[in-house]
Image 1: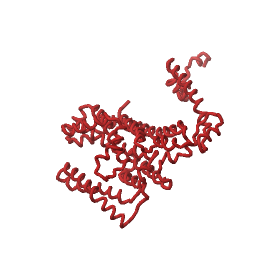
Image 2 (image 1 turned 60 degrees about the vertical axis):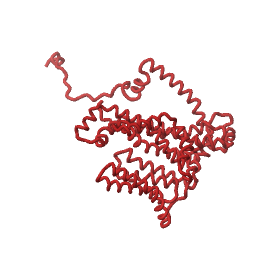
Image 3 (image 1 turned 135 degrees about the vertical axis):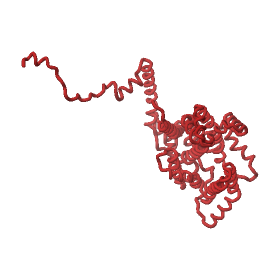
Image 4 (image 1 turned 90 degrees about the vertical axis):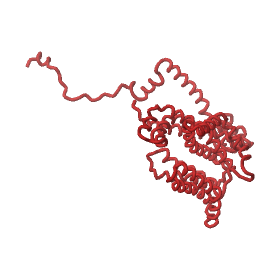
Length: 433
């Protein structure tokens, strides 16, 4: 074969070339910065300004934090240690962290609110994450009584007899509901009320005499700090969601009386500041109780915060219900479902999915609004900072460190709620993109 013929034969590759990596500008951190920080002249300008302000802020905050004094007996001692340098007096947190967390709770009983907090996380876990065993929901139902017993103490038979009231209501409802569902619900509720008002206390006293089991009692005025915050916040959140759902459904009811009651309640509560309701819980509510009746202030505040939150949640869920197309309601009717079946199986799941961002927004705002209880002399973290801690001559003048610590703890709780809502939205996202 000649050289000319050999050069005219095309080269044929029988194996594939190895896959090349993408260009450095189209992957990883460089791509992210290009798309998010340096995409156009306006983004470049905003990025440069943001970096400038972050650097300026860091030049002030970082020395203040890293030069901070963590061990000292007073503000004056902190200043002596700093000797003119810029730095925070974090010693107040080291000295008073127990008070910020537990208020005036007896120090020998700190394990009780800590155990209650861990139990709360365990009780919420199967509610928040459906992948966990459903049997854990039994503990979720029992935890409110366990948590009350741990934090306030007293005889164990009080919470047990209170729980027994729900059992009485269940069995009465099961017996009567065979004849009428509505009458069964009313009979169960009436039986529970009769049990709690007239029988629970007597049986609790009898069992406490026969088998005395309990913890040392702690008065509500000694419950404070972040323990008080999570009691008020979590209790109100858990109670306000089902109440808000009922109010939203009631506002759309065809029954004039039910719709009118729900509308008046929602509009009245939304038109009144929360601080006004807290004053009502603290002062005015006592005038409507029989003479000599004791109604715990924490319970009164939980009721008022729950009602306040439920009104806002009701409007959020009503927006979710209004966003559903009419065809969903007609589809439920075509399947032969009654009202409650269609609400439970078709309407409400979709409405709640749409309402998740709004509901979580209300929850976060409500959790932060619990600091308003400081105006009615309850010692939540803000009440402790503005009261006993700053009233101490040793720490009078320490503001940024204390309020910064409180803000940091609130941020942890609120950020966790925000992240869970995003997780829930991703999990329930059934649309196609």
